[in-house]
Image 1 (cartoon, rainbow, N blue to C red):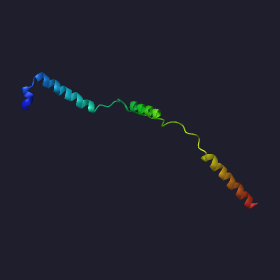
Image 2 (tube, rainbow, N blue to C red):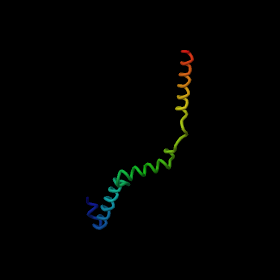
Image 3 (cartoon, rainbow, N blue to C red):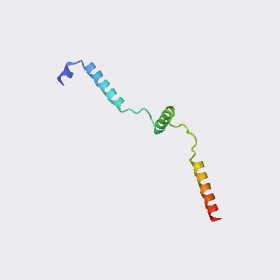
Image 4 (cartoon, rainbow, N blue to C red):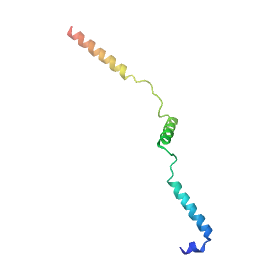
Length: 79
């Protein structure tokens, strides 16, 4: 406290203002709305390649062929 009194009052005031501005900037949010945040998030993820469409899966075709073979085998056993 003694050191503050010895300093120039204008310098002390400027120092306090700088400290306050620094403290406020630590809690500032870059986005004003949730929509802005989500838009930036999606843009960043697209840039990383997370939303690229992969090749079509062959599982549905394999399941269909498997079911057809099971039905055909059942019909052949019953006839």
